[in-house]
Amino acid sequence: MTALRRPSPGALTAALPRVLAAFLLTALALLAGTAVLSQPAHAAGTGLDAVADALKKSPVYVDPRVREQLPDADRNALAAKIRDADKPVFVAVLPDVPEFPRATLLRDLRTKVGITGVYAVHLGANGFNAGADPQVLSHNAARNLTEAARNSHKGDAKAMVTDFAQQAVGQARGAAPSSWNEGDGGSATGLLIGGAVVVAGGVGGYALFRRAKKQREERERAELAALQVVVDEDITAFGEELDRLDFTPSEPGATDAMRTDYTGALDAYDLAKSKMAEARRPEDVRPVTEALEDGRFALATLAARRTGAPLPERRLPCFFDPRHGPSTADVPWAPPGGAPRQVPACAADATRIADGLEPMARTVQTPGGPQPYWDAGPAYSPWAGGYFGGGSVLTAMVAGTLLGSVLSAPSAYADSSFAGGPEGGSESGADFNPADFGGGFGDGGGFDGGGLDGGGFGGGDW
Image (cartoon, rainbow, N blue to C red; front, side, top):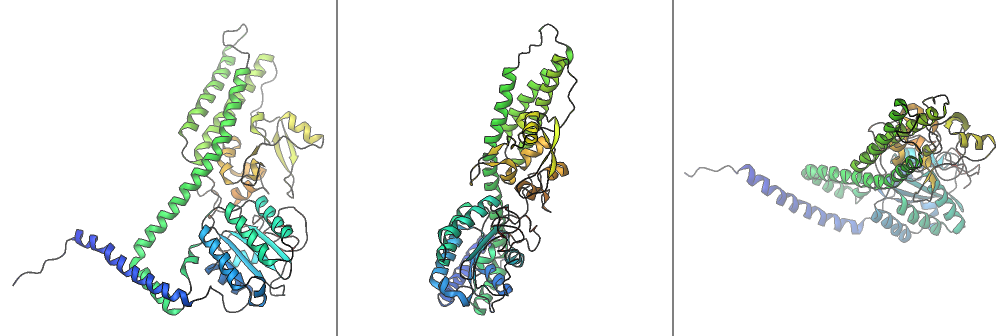
């Protein structure tokens, strides 16, 4: 009798992809056939829980009572555009009824869906509002897109939500939630999907890991590219200060202390350039701005020694623009709609604030146009951390700004890049700060109250 031969591990490994491929192709074929018969997801019932359940499965939900505002064909087309863009943008068209209270609707919807993203709601005949988690879309961008859609398409729900969604997917960060890919073709489809998951769980897990890794790397590359521009400006500005310096170590009256200060400034300049050249991730920028701050303090100390003035106290740099050099005083300041706090300022900015003028704030380019660095996004966290030391000091200074919302998030310090919490499209549940869910108008996520103060999750005048 011929002995049976056990297949080698290599043979099994080689055969597994073919088995999986055959199974998955069969599953996909059955799913495709089922999908023809299925309709886009709509949860049973019409309350906020039903809306949230539907948005977990599809980017667009239309309440049956207002279906004429966004007919099925238009709803499906808009959902397809959002899916194809692979962005976490959620749209709901709802009737103006007590079960959807204006004052808390956006915030409550974000809580129940539990996914980081951009949320837009058309309510009743003319109401429209939107909000976004700051790591997905800045407060200013969400607010401006909301106003533009509202003003451009009064009385036209279809045009309003379509315009907003198309603009939002072009600017939102992150990816569509994985739950949108689950479909809803009934129990047979559910069983088929379950079987495919059991067989291909390992393959799917690896694919999700690769996708998340790719998204993180793409985000980091984009953030580092933005930081490169800003840091190069900082390094150039410090180099120009050194060029203007009329000091030579051998000049009459030069002391060893002066020469030490001068050498320290030169070393800081060289270190900043070399660290920036080595930077590969956004957090690598922090040592660059730390070196620049050390160099500017060395120059301030040198200037005091040469004039016989008292040596400067080691203070934080000017909050409004670290290129202004070490601060000379703490002054009261508040972001729009925020609470006043004391921030360090250079002499020129302290005088401007005392005279009732705006300080000379450092602005950087964003998709929404030039913004002060504290409202430009999470990428500037390590940049600011190098100047101001990060931690509670920086968080207190930027409270109420986009950067402040990033630093105060529970996950803000999960890594040194201050990524600012779950990326767009990831499940975060109810763990979000409603004061940071920005855009729309007013506070608290409602549709009443008016005012372009940018607070809360949406809010304001529907």
